[in-house]
Image (cartoon, rainbow, N blue to C red; front, side, top):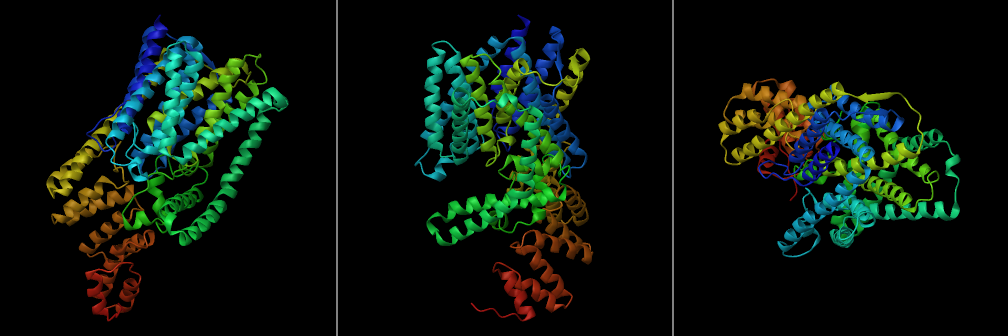
Length: 613
């Protein structure tokens, strides 16, 4: 049957895209899985083209909201500062939307076959993860909290492993009551092992997600079977508009004051509880990131700063309060809250596309529970779908699963499954109809090939960036510059720490005495990362070498504003004012320093500052 070969291609591509690892780049999982997913979906489109598989779809608000979210993310490239990061993030969302659409399409075409193969593969995927975790456990010397972070399974982080196990748990539970023996017994064993792993990993966000899922399951079961609340009488548009208004008011009006109060409370606890200060510092840092994210939201509240550009704009809110960011030169790549992440990058418009899609799925499915015949297995399907989607949303409020391919893949499949039931049992208002013909398939195939090529260019960028790091450590400057030039493209311009590749090549050129060329690289780096403290400091230094004093002062002062504990620009400013015999201003900058150094002591002697030991 031609449908089955296309379905198999889709599902095996999903499994491969959830577990692939490549060791010779910086992130071992993200780009390999991105490319794999792009290739898999492109192959599905190709086989659809070859097999003459055609279908039509009545457009409803759920599908249009999901498509609108992906299209708006892609459109944000136009105003994003770091366009390569925006292109990558938008491409991920397009791939996830295609996954959602194909899941619905294949369920509609061959429900039993698609589900049977998918569930069996989900069991196989868990077993792969479990074996990898067992190997990683055997490598540990102890099982303290720090050691547990080395348990990543086939994911890039312990917390990401836990959140993926949570998603996988839905499919294991479905396998238990949908598949026949011996698969159902194997699924039961996997459920028990997965639960033990989730307890062992001690990921609080996932424990919260499980609690929310259990609470939603129990609540829906009680309301349907005992309370019999007539939710069917509540019109869906009124319900959705009410929830959207409430959610927007919560995020735009109430959440930031709550965050700030929590920051204050956590700071007070930290001051009086030394035994738990490290834990509290981590929690406080998360709250500080959330609070500073609102600086981005206020800047471009309607359209956002652009997909993938949160890390580019965050330093504009200053790094004060982020100790690791200032003292350890640590860079933050995400706010540990997917909702704030979406709101800051895509603004009010993109955020509400996402909410309409998410809430549309949840509340439409809840209404179906009162419409369907008394089929206990179908109701169980819907209740579990709703419970795990809401649980995943709870995890997303405290973590960053949106970043990873495997998470986006499987939650998109879950969205597709619940959408299939909605389309089957709930009459939604029709906003038109699309017929997916050969022309549409061919156009989609071209888009996917472009996405795959983007992934390959980024893969190439990470490969050469890794080599560039090695040349930097061994001080092989010409090779560093060559690798940096090879890394850069339209799809890759900043490394995983949000530092432009031009910054590395600029520093290498400056070390070789090519100050004019170095300045050109620093200027290009500044265009990509206008709030990066290292870029600003080194760009200012390049202006010193070209005797452009005013420009140098401007960028040194900006670097000092962004990172108040970063002493380098302050020392450079002090040196400039000492050379200009302006000891008063030099003293101001020396008094603002946060650390002792030989250079500081020398400057203080020149201006006559005496400090008590």
